[in-house]
Amino acid sequence: MWESILTVAKQLVDPVSRVKVELRQLCFKEQSHAVVPGFAGGSTAPGFVTSSTSAGRLDFCDTAVRSCSGSSVIHDGDEISKMSTNDSILALHGFCGDRLVMYPLCRKLRQRGYKVTNYGYRSIWKTIEHHAAKLRKAAEAIEANPEVVKFHLVGHSMGSILIRVMLQEYQPEKLGRIVMIGPPNRGSHVATRFASVFGWLSTTLCQIKDTEDSFVNSLEQQIDPDHELGIIQAETDLVVRPENTRLPGAREYIMLPGFHSSVLVRESCAMQVDHFLQHGSFAEQVAGV
Image (cartoon, rainbow, N blue to C red; front, side):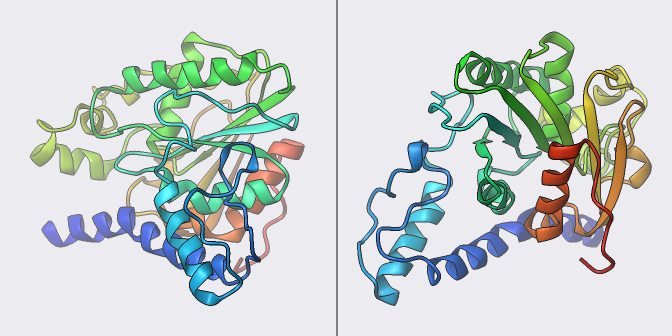
């Protein structure tokens, strides 16, 4: 049992190390006066050492890693910077994750021209309802921005459940399309196993169990057909079973190589998210991508 739990736990934290590797690779490609993706208004990273040397670029990298958890990225409804383009994305991580896990996907989507808000929340604590209410405030702030014509929602794992709960109470007029990645729409068997040991510590963990009486299974088991929803499932997902990602009313499903969280790092994930947000359908998948 514990070996299985450790295997799954590794899935949840492994992307953080992969993000750091990606950032270091990015650093050596950046020129002097580089701009850190995700900083409001494209401002230069605070503390960045202006240098064309490798050491300078590594200073930039370390700053970028630290900044993924900084105030430049929204956390629990902090002030949202003005968007400079019309198509925006509100992205959020899952249980026991943070914005660093979503950083590779958000960076790739920014490179495709989107203005991305990498929303963070303290997923282990409080309740899903509490976090969904905070998410609503972030969505309302984006909705109120006159420069935003349309914004999309992209959720990973439990973040997808926050989106569902928010949409039950709030229907943004500017909402575009929705993509869920590895969503425990009918719960997670791993959450059920962990909850038997750590349930006293985390209410949200208990809420995403795959038991019939869990919170997630008490939600309306259908997405509003007015919302164009695409669901991405990782091929080797040990956290959420394939059948538990399904949600009636979803427009399309696609399976991509990778684990529950490491799928976020893959180029194919960003490409499919982008394609669905643009066209309402996933692109034809290339084997091995």
